[in-house]
Length: 215
Image 1 (cartoon, rainbow, N blue to C red):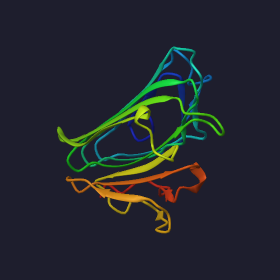
Image 2: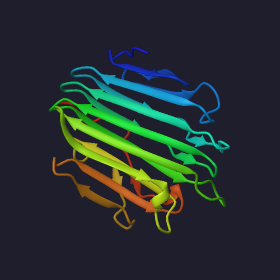
Image 3: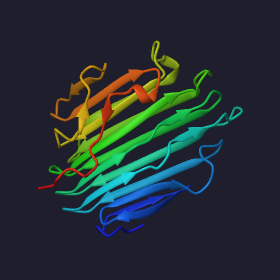
């Protein structure tokens, strides 16, 4: 849907609600994620505009009985634009098989803060299968390309919580240094904050409540 900031956010399976001049909510229209589902989310932030995306609740990929599902996100932030996405936990239940991709294209001076929380299995059950791939490009040049395959495992952990800061150091509202979060500085100078643990509520990562300034 076009928002009041003249950006665009479109999705299958999810409805988009404007909750402010530059803030929208993504809400499922139906039960997701089920076998055979292919959820697509496309975000374009116009030049000089700002957008904040919130998700009122997390997503559970349910057991798929030998079938699979996809969740594909494509983000474009134009010159001088900025985006904050408050992602909620994405839980891959035992028996699920999910391919999740996130593709981000930034103009040279665009900014973004993206949170992603991946959970392998619900409480007291084994993990489902998840292949999660992230690709970030700025002005056509690669910034981050990585892939997580749950078959490789996370050691004793079942949760990956991370915040990716692109072009906006300081976008985190708070990072509890007592936690086991890592801060990785990419060759581009952008920052990837990552925490591994057993429960989502134990993560020390939080994201600021407003979009980073494009000024």
